[in-house]
Every structure is written in C-alpha cells, then in structure tokens.
Image (cartoon, rainbow, N blue to C red; front, top):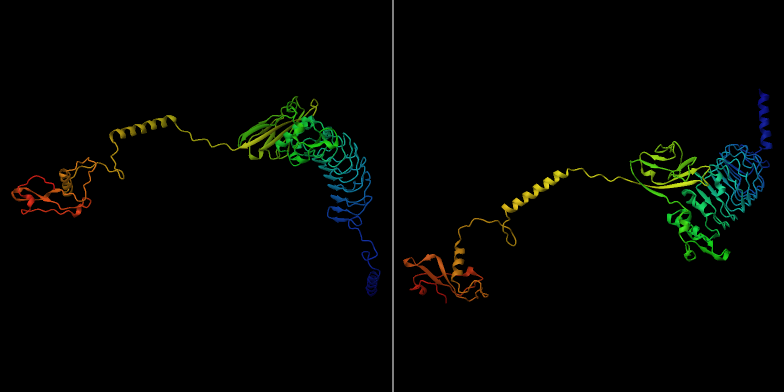
Length: 504
C-alpha cells in the first residue's frame, strides 16, 4: 500500500509542474462545443463583432438564438443550419452577404425571426427563402435590392412583418404577396425605395389591418388623383402608417426628381382632381351598433361565391370554423360570423377575407362594430289609472276653491276672519274723536296740526243731572295721544249751559 501512496504523490507533483490545459500557453477548452471567442449562455450563442468571414464549423445543438451580426460573412453554405433543430432567431445583419442561394435555410423549419438587414443583397430568388414555413418576421431593410422574384415569399404562410425599406426597388406588385397568407401579414414596409409606379386598385383591395401597416413614405410616387384621394381617405380614417409619416409622403408632379411635392401640404397640385373616379376604388366599411348581451350576425358579401372565408377579429385573431379560442365568436358553415352574447371586447373592426378561383384578388368586407350598453327601460304604468287620478285631484281642487275660499290677508301676515269683540274704551274714544273732528276724513289735509284744539267727550265721567261733561283739551300733539289730559267738573267754564260739542 505504501508504494501506491508514493505513486499518487508523484503524479500530483508532475501535474503541478507541467500545468493544466487551462493555464497560460494553452487555448481555452470549449464548453459544450462553444466556438472560440463566442459567448454561449444557455440556448444563446453570440459571435457578434468578431470579424468572421465564415460561419464557425461547430455550433451547439441547443442553440435557439444565434447572433452572427457585425461580421464579414459573404456566403452561407447550404445545410449549415442542420444541427440547430431548436433555432428560433437568426441575426445575420451588418455583414457582406450579396446573395443567398438555394437551400441556405432548408433546415430552419422552426425559425421565427430572420434578420438580413444592412447587407449588400441585390436580388431575392425564387428559392432563397425555402424552408421557412414558420417565419414570422423577415428584416431585409438597408440592402441594395433591385429585383424580387414573384414567388420569393411563396410558402411563408406565417409571415406577419416584412421590412423592405431603404432599398432600390423601382416597382412592387402586390402579386408578390400571393404566396403569403393575407390573414397574417400585418406590416409591409416599402418606404425609402424608388417606387415610381404602384397599382392603386391593388392598394384599395388590401385588408384594413394591412393598410394600417403599409408604409409607402419617402418614395417618388406619381401625383395621381386616385392615389391622392385614396391616401387622403386613409389619413382621415387615422391609419397609423399614413398619419405618422404624413410629411414624408411625396410625389413627382412632372416626372423629374426636382418636382417633388408633399401629398398633404401642396393641395394646389390636386385642385383639378375629380373625386368621381376614386369613389369606387375602396368599399366603405359598414358601421354596426350592437348592445351588450344581445346577439350579432355578420355576413361576408362578395361579388361571386367564395371557396374559403376567414375572419380577422379586432384583436387580430384569425377566425375560422368553429370560431374563436374563447368560444364567444362562432364561424358558421356559410361563412357568416355569429356572436351570441355581445361584450365590450367585441368592439372594433371585423374583416372578412374571401378567396376563390373566380376572385381576381382576395376580396374583403369590413364591419366597424360599436358596442353600447342598453338604456334602462322605464317602469310600466297604467295610463287609465293615472288619468282617473288626475281628474279626481282636479275636482277636489275645484271644490276647495268654491266652498273654502282663501282668507283675506294683510300686507305682512294673513289672519282669518274672527267674530267681532267688545270695543275697548280707547277704541270708543278714537271713534268719538273722529266724529267731532272738523276736518273731513277724505280731505287732503286730514292730519291735524300740532297745536290744534279739539273737544273730546269724556266717556268715563258724567256731570250733574246725568249730563255728559265736556272737557276742553289743552294744546297737545296728535302724534302723542298718551300725553292728553282731560278736564271735567262742575266748576269748568265750558260746562255751563252747553250740551253740544264746542271747538276752539
């Protein structure tokens, strides 16, 4: 056993003296076949900015996101993606690729994102993109594309975003899109090219959701009246592709580069344009009003019977039979769309897409659905009962008016009539004074002067022989009757042989 221990110690000493492969002087060991100088992290492989002229020979099979951007790649080998069966995103931007070739993406059936921007591609062949059946985003902007094969995008059934801006395309026919699924394509960027001709009827026939993502700005488009009216209508409808870049929509007035004018700022160029030829280009959308909780039925009206009908919901969900994922929308056998219980989520634009052999292009029909809450219904009531009640109330009011007239009221407070009461002595005195007054009650100067002498009867005293004694008042103030003093007695000079009133 001793010799075994000595042998192990000797091997350890030799290992320390010679060093390990990870020490200086030895290249780093590749971890899970990670290429030299690249970065591998889980399912991410980044070889960006390394000046590579060719793709690394060995790539980790678990790679789902491969970044080869900012290199000097000029060619791609056919079948080079065969080991990467989990690949979902491929970044090849900012390289020197001038052509692709057949079979380059033959083994990328699960690829979702392909970035080929900022290269030197001049053409796109018929089979350059074969094998990309699951591709959703294709970035080809900032190249030198002059020609696109009519079937270059054929087979890209899941493509939703296609970026062709900043190239040298002089024409573009929407026949290029025949290979695409019209129900998925949401963004088509054709901006900053050399488009001098574009089919206005083909533009008008596009689905509404694609019009909202169709970018045509910064192109030398012709100053065509129909194109002008079509873009004006898109601008009025608020389509973001036109509204957000309104200043960059230009056209050539005289087919020379120096005659560029802006569509939405130089209306004088289009003063003589008649609106009549443009009216039949685009079928107007139908506006429908639906109530929450009610049912709704939409029909796809086409010029001729269609072989296949599909719908696109306001949430950009493709609707085919039997219907939506949540089950709230059903697509019936005749192609119509039925909503049994309308909710707020059903508000927006529904687009019907009809395809068939006799249809020149995919025909579309648009419904703009507005959802409202129903108004609360008023409570039901009996009209005859209310009429009878009103008549009874009116009759009672008439009887009250006839047999119970309102009491007479004074200026400030209303007091009802009362039975007459026994007058007080002061009231009798006031009445007698009014009889003895020499001033008529209706005379203008009915108010006595301050020094007026008036004779009053003295109601409380009687003289000798039961005669009423008279007293001559001294000078007094009529406005202060409280200071009046009456004189009576047998010694009064006014009581001798006088029985009538006397005024001095």
